[in-house]
Image (cartoon, rainbow, N blue to C red; front, side, top):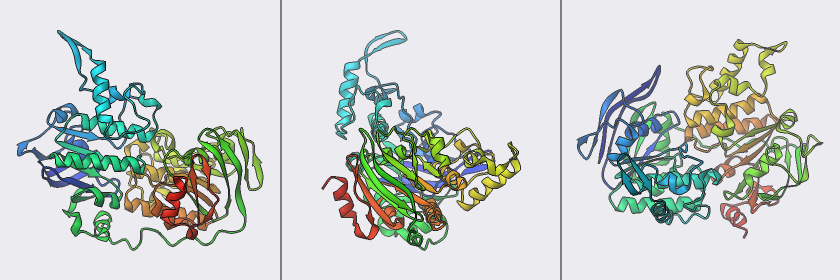
Length: 498
């Protein structure tokens, strides 16, 4: 169905693809796995016509294939689901799903009228694949939560009736029930002969849906085969170029008795009805729960990004006014990592050095004057320490892969020397090698005496690094219990209100 041979792509001095060979057969789900920066997204953009390769050949059904644009690729039966959503927020769900495929009611030379009734009916038919409660053909996309927008992105590719569908981290923002719906849809597409290229950093997810795999490392295809014949340890070794002894580091020492943060019945309706906990020095507190349960809104309220209507927050024993802005909370020792790294976590057009040092510029300044050399050296410490793949500290943040951007956002908190790290989905969209680096950084921060609140939808990492855990359900946080008092089953029972 699709054959790639010797594909190469360079961006200035950066080699993104350095000889990629892949073959896919009709009706298979082929997993493309590798670390962030390995070239996976670049490869999909080349196949989808968004980028032109510098060398190499592509064939679809044995015929030479060299799309001049994404539209040409779509006409050839190739559709891409982007990792970073490419929707028009001011348009409706139906208009986004059927963009470029709009049914016309009446034609004139050079013009046509949209058949909006037909658009709504076709969009409604496609939406039946998911039965998502937030989705309706006439909903404005900008009003939807991120998980629902991800579904719109997926349905837009399906609407094209493509014979080759490229999926770049399609489940990164989806709750488990939508992942189940997506996998059911993939199986139906596969049964009809559609070939799917699937990128994911979750190996258990890859094993659930994919037939074969190709591993990319440093822009090269280094391994391929049947997933049933490859162990997770072998896949990880191919991805990082060396064996990985353990995904999770040794747990940080037991927390001290000193209370860093005391949250007393904080409420930020309608998302947060009641949340109370104490965070000790050196403690990693995990917060589990379903998407939309109020987890994100709780830590945003702690950071002053959501208005709290009642309750109080004490940091180092001092009460923070409910109206205290984020700047005051930064000064009190709180640091926040947003789940939306592009929208909130980074200043994409600024350099890596500016992003890393922006919350503690005084470390790079003398008498109010910023010393660029010191700023460069401070940034380099974190670029090296977190293994961030970048040409220079002065490189714009937008030029990095998603995983490396996430590590830059975390580096900002570590450079800030925050006493309390509020981490919202810190490994979202991160490859396994990068996850190892981030887990080590989190555990090292706790070992140095920081307190960490870690929101995550990925239970293995909560059980792998946390000392304690609480579960959010319909805006209410359960009492905090030691991690060994929980099981995955009891967490899920608490998350659904059992």
